[in-house]
Length: 225
Image (tube, rainbow, N blue to C red; front, side, top):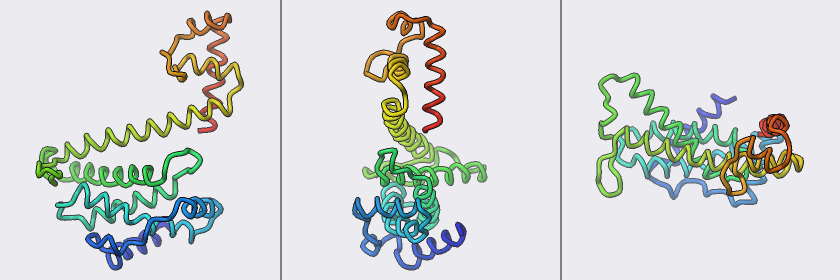
């Protein structure tokens, strides 16, 4: 099923849409329509899944044209980026709170970057300082620039998503004592993180008791992540 969908997707990209004609791409879904499609997909609706993929192909083309506009293998990059889009649709969780476009962009970029890394490993003569593109100001863009810059963006987005999820779960799944200890230990209220001994002194309990509660709270958070 997955390979068939990829095949259909690649045909749609190359035969119908074209990388240089963004006006031919299906328009992005409205927020409510996108939400409904993800709900239907979660219930096993393959048509909803395909709809989400097709209506976000514009994002793949946008990323390729923006970051790799002068690359000679743009069609390959669109195909590779489209695989990242499929992965994004299959792994996206609306309840995490992040916008799908933000999450999908990360997955698309990551798939393209993995391709560049594999090419660098397979082709010994390729240098990480080799120019592969130019930026908006006409300055050369190397493999090193792409890998270093995009990795930072990916990590930053991933950290923000995970941080938001953890903060929400702390308020929803922990009891009052667990919440209090986790907030103090990791500085979730904006203060500095505190040691178990400092938390114990603040709450008037033993350090071993703080350690036991913290361990249980972290296990609870892991189960819900």
